[in-house]
Image (tube, rainbow, N blue to C red; front, side, top):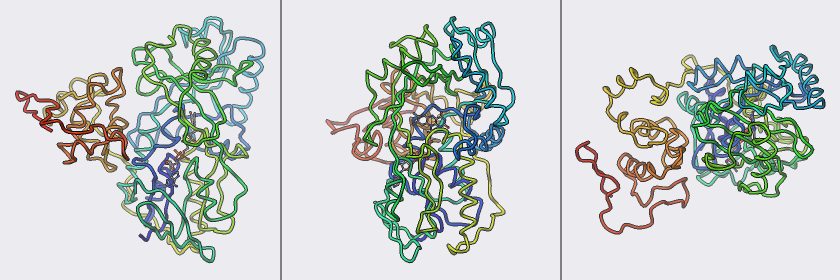
Length: 501
Ligand SMILES: Cc1cc2nc3c(=O)[nH]c(=O)nc-3n(C[C@H](O)[C@H](O)[C@H](O)COP(=O)(O)OP(=O)(O)OC[C@H]3O[C@@H](n4cnc5c(N)ncnc54)[C@H](O)[C@@H]3O)c2cc1C
């Protein structure tokens, strides 16, 4: 397949670049090895949009984080119809050592051009966070930090890019790249070969492996794992801001985040591990996070019981610890993005601008013309989300389409209409977890016990997929093993719903 620009990796970075490039009259394609976009690091992180108050502004990651800019997030999230919560953040201090760090961070914030960063006294902290450990003495308050749902954000970038002509190829793992006379000849993937003029290597943890297919490299990516707790929504009002715990003798400090979806997210440790595929959580580190972070900061949060799930994410740390964004040494038509660890989620729009600029510089040499489209549309239409609608809005939409009245996920109150919207979206949800990531069905307290079979039935009914072929997350993750006889998943004749499998 011929394409002008081939983006390897459908994480937040690849999708932000794709959206930028969708403004041009170019043939742009994303190849993603997994069966959905946002299945790598972009899916499993702290979900914070950092202001950069505590970042070293002279590093590349510092510059790009500051350039990403919270005001830009407001505009972009409006265009993409993505929820972006202006929580602000609090870095809590319990002793004189912490106060020294806080004062230095306030100075750093000024140096980085951030406004409103200030020190709070005990009474002020308690007013901002009534449930915090009352032994807190002072805190740094940054009004500029925010949170986002990283999957929703990445999906929105990708969907908007697709609406504007970008092609997304899933289950397309890059296996090899052939270069001749400093130009790319072919990129071999599990779904066939591509002949791009330019390659963007945004393969996250595997960006070193991709870079190595083309050139000798002097960098590498090493995975650093972080584990998390997710608390039930019944705790949604317990924490108001993104909280940084202070460093202790055994911890560099961790975070507690009130997510846009109403859960509380707590993590994470930073453990060097040898295996880029090891996403396991461990009792050792979950205990550590509870002891050094959760219990220390919010003693009222339980160790178990209301923890709906735990998960781990892998930071793609480079040997320099900074972002490495450069042309491949001997192949100037390939751009490598390596070591995009935190704050990569925040920096993605600024990274995309930088890469756009780099492509403009090599356009002529690569044989592409970078003319802007007249009809580019930055708006990703809003999809109905009943949980966020007023009663009047719900009544109206249900009158127009009764599928929005059929509740499939009881815990998260997700309707059949919302699930059908996900199935028919620009990047369609084709399995149970893809629907879960887009709608939150199955993310509640029962973790899919109730809605799981109903979602299989809807996928069968809507896409005509044999129920035995419906998977949890692609590949061989089939859910049903065999048919015993005519199995009825659910029948409600009165409600005009009868699905026999
Ligand atoms: C524990 C943790 C906490 C973090 N917290 C924050 C935070 O609060 N705020 C913040 O700004 N940042 C945070 N980050 C960093 C942020 O999540 C990352 O910087 C960002 O998600 C990186 O995006 P990416 O697109 O580069 O990588 P990824 O999301 O990993 O995307 C790379 C994609 O490439 C695909 N791929 C790999 N190899 C191939 C191949 N051969 N062929 C085709 N596709 C391939 C992968 O499947 C993957 O989908 C955190 C990271 C971690 C791990």
